Structure formats: C-alpha cells, structure tokens
Image (cartoon, rainbow, N blue to C red; front, side, top):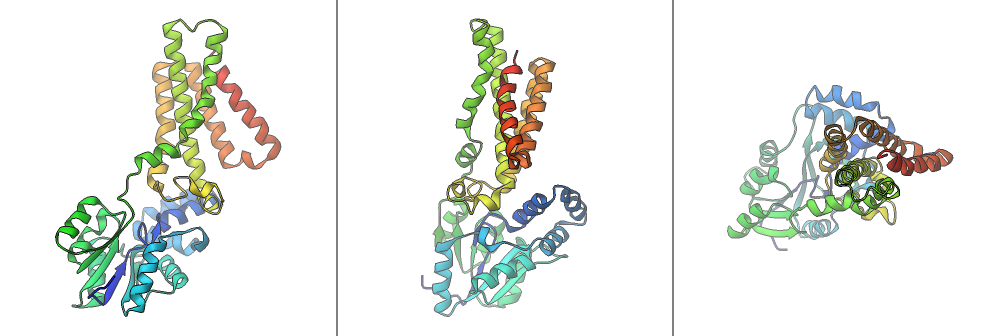
Amino acid sequence: MATSAKYIAVDLDGTLVRGDVFLEACLRLLTDNILNIFLLLAWALRGRSYLKSEVAARRPLDMATLLFEADLIETLKREKSGGAHLILATAADGRHARQVADHLGIFDGVLASDAAVNLKGRHKLAAIRNYVGNEPFIYAGDSVADRPIWEAAWACIFVRGPRKDQKAAEKSGRLLHAFGAPKNQFRAFVRAIRPHQFLKNLLVFVPLLTSHRYLDTNSLVATGLAFVCFSLCAAGVYLLNDLMDLPFDRQHALKQHRPLAAGLVSIPLAASGAFLLPACAILLAYALLPYVFTVVLAGYFITTLAYSLFLKRVSTVDIMTLAALYSVRVIGVQ
C-alpha cells in the first residue's frame, strides 16, 4: 500500500481492536464486584471523560483478552517500515491507549481522552491536526463518529466501516483500504440469544398434552405465550452470561467463537437485550397470562440470573438449580 502521507492516525475501539476497551473494563469491574455499579454511576454523573479516567485507573486492560485486527496491524507495520509515522488516536482513556501502544510497539504517538476531554469526532480531528500541523494524514476508523476525520483526511482506511462513507471515499479517490464487511449485527445477535436452546421450553406443553387439552384454542394460545415468555427470559440471561464471561470466553477454544466474544455483537447491544428481553417477557405475561404464571416467570428469571452469576460455580447447587429450572417450565403453566 503505497502512500504519500507521512502520518497515519489509527482509531482504537472497533478499528485496531474489535470491541470497546472502556466498556470491557467496566464489565471487568462489575465481574470483580457487582456493587461497583454504584461507583460507575457516581463517576458517570461527573461526565463521560471522568468516568473513563476512573475506570482506566482501577482496571488496566488484559492484552490477552483483546481481539486485535491482525490484517490492519500487518498493514501498519509495513507502512511504518516504509517511513510512516503512526499515531494511535482514540476516545479511550490515555492509560488504556498507552497500554495498547506499548503492547504493539508500532506507534510513534498517542492521542487519547483524559479526565477533562473525550477525544471523539471533531475533538479528535482537532487533536490530529494539532499533532501533524499542515501535513496530510491518513485515518483508519470504523464508525459514523469518525466521519469528520475521514472527510478531512488525505486518504481513508475502513475497518467494517459504514457503506455510505466507504462509497464516498471511493468516489473521491481517497479509499486506501477496507478491512472486513460493513457491520450488520442482526444475524449475530440472533445467534447470541441461542434460539436452538428454546427447545427446552417446549416442556410448557407437557401439561397440555397430559390433560388432553391440546384441542382447546384458549389453552393452546396461553401455552404458546408461556413458551415465548420463557424463551425471551432465557435469551436475556444468555446475553448477560456472555457479557459477564466475555474475557474468559475469548480464551476458550470453543466459546471464543460466540458472537459477543468474537466481536460480532457490541456490548451495548448485548446489554440492551439482556435487560429488554426479560422485561418484555414479564410485561407480556402480566398483560396476557394469569398472575400466578407471572410470579413463576419472575422467579424463573431471578433463579436463572443467580445461576449465571454465581450458582453455576457451586457443583451441588448447580445440579439442583438446573433440575428446578426444568421443573418450573412444567409447573408454571398448570
């Protein structure tokens, strides 16, 4: 890749690594102690930059669990050997950014957020211009937030970037390289909620069959709704489980291919699903099914939540909890 620009500025989150180092550090804090959520909320009240700074001060990154973009890094190494000056330009906190830069050993400079400034979008562009002066620069990024920088760059590198911006860069002759297909998380999200596991919830139809009410329309509809509610709850817990186990899954031979661990589903999307899917299930049950079923469903959700967070680590309790969760699918619809 021959270039005529001396400087190449490279984004971190979603570009140099898949995922968001700040959010992953937040998850590690919560994994350490769930009560740290109150610390996060308190820091957030003082602004996003302050929050990032406090998280980075308390939770250094584990390089072994980061998903680096190998093809991009190899390209950057070739450019550096050809005389390019590489800059890590990121909205991540400076502590995290310098950790990554030190680990890779290819960057000549680091531009990052601190407790006062969140280096994103136009703030990042101003920092890059201040660094390079009047020299042209190349920018490698991945998201819509990078658009002002791509527009100002001499040439653009995209890592699963938006189609609109890639086409604009190509049309203007400034598209230097594009790594990976543009992001489409829907299919990966469906995989992440494990629909094949919903088959377990077919147990809710057992009472319908044993009582010979399978020809009763009202009973069929109610049982079908119960199946949907149990499935939505389970899907939310699967997402939460993957969030809490993210760094461990990335080091597991098989689990590293799960959508969240592989960086195919973002942490915000997974967290939203972990909250909204069970909430929808309980609201649906409350609105359309007997009150007793809503109570059973809420108990099922709390139990699966407790199992994912800590009960699965206790062997005897682990087996008893799983047995109870299978039983409640049958009991809940009687």
